[in-house]
Image (cartoon, rainbow over all chains, first blue to last red; front, side, top):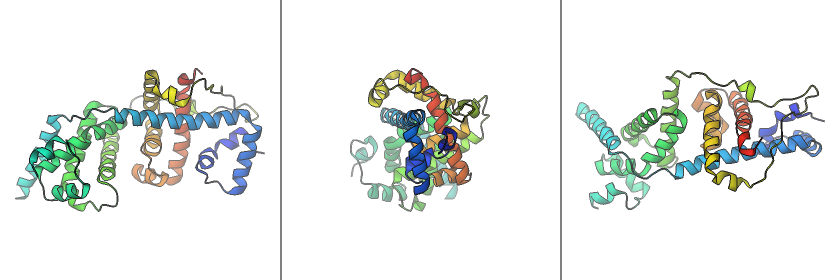
Length: 86
Length: 203
């Protein structure tokens, strides 16, 4: 039977479903027996979910307008490069 | 097609057509692309650099690189994915050139065990659904603070893998580390991130 510290190293592969059958079974048996690790893996997955959801939310709230300064600087740079090549 | 349509972004342009016009060097297509994606790219660059000025520079460099290399774009991904990859590579290079400053030690953020190798952390109590937690303003602040509190080597892996969605192998390539180092860092980063989010759960 795995202990909590040994269980820890398999968490990501367990979540991804990429563990070999025999190891996956050991992890599953540990989770059945250990309430702390059940709680931990739920919190671990939730924190990934919350991080992704909040970053996506921040990205979606970005205003549409783009500073004219950026457009001007980029166009100038491209033109300078073009004129050097001519 | 009027120039106005290209520059005010009131309508979307089919990607195939946009790429053709970018390749032919039409200024209005450059402006269209900058207006369409500029802010989204800025938000991503800001997440990596944690600096308004550096984020602006990264977006500017990205567009210059995109316009100068558009003829090399092989369409194996969408134009957005290609641009985002260029932006992230530029942001990573920018970070490498900066002094890191004081960082938390990752070992202080990892799980703890007793002498029998049993967990000793306090369990999270879910008194609200994840959706409710996410919708709160203070959650955004805590998550952002947690991301920036991670030591840089771990923060980058977490951002690339869990936020941007790159594979472990892609993350390893982008950071020039081995796949096994990428996996180890990801696990530690996730464990540390979970610990840093404890204020959200009243722990």
